[in-house]
Length: 224
Image (cartoon, rainbow, N blue to C red; front, side):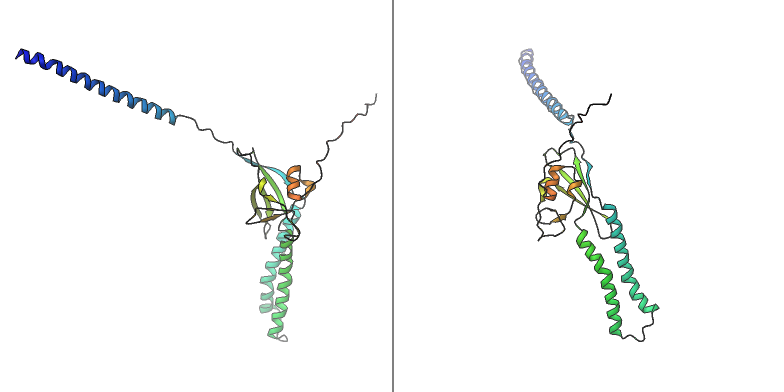
């Protein structure tokens, strides 16, 4: 019996050693994996700087045009609503036939709406402000935001890149100096003399004039 116990003891010892070695390897590998995973999670993410729009151009007639747009739209609404109500409730029309009344009201409405439509056609491309997003994006593309006026004088925003600016001919739009995009075109008009960025001015106005020279230094000697 003693011999049997002595023979079994080495077997148990070897099995115990193998068990401890296997579990030790598993524990070490798990700790290494968790350490790597934790290191990946703790790596700080570098965020790109936030771009803020900076004003680089303002149209000289922005305020006047906004007031004119609102006045024209208000007169059109008053004409569309007021003329029919005047003929229904106010003005005696027994001596005018139905056809005559339709002609008079239609002429008044056409005159009221045509001025608003013509103003919209002429001033639709007018750009009141241009902002540039700074700092420049990591891809190196300069991005801008142009502000135009809607039918009621409200702001209409258009965002574009420097590469999106294209020249425009008078046949495409007689009141525009450039266009943005190729599929869905947006026509724009800017005053070249008020554009401080020379490169952008040449693209948006087809102005090939050189950049204004820096003022010469005053060499006049000071009076004694």
